[in-house]
Image (tube, rainbow, N blue to C red; front, side):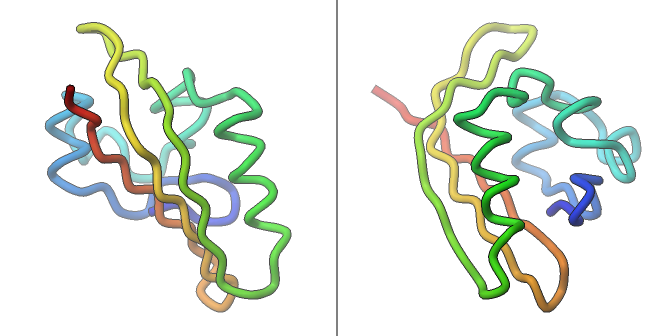
Length: 97
């Protein structure tokens, strides 16, 4: 879960396992700059920025390839924005097969 400045405010166990980054090293860091720099592309970061312009709750879904140290991981991203809370949720599900 990210705030409007893309700072990580919550980080679940699944992402911790995938990224091999401990929660304590992630909370408070910028997701796009410090945690997942491979997401600094229009197809991901651009969609995040676009979501934040909405003054109503919104959701986008798309496929993406995370570039981890152990290699690429194909995922489906569900990214939602809650303007009342000022929080975005980014969920990644690995695409197998």
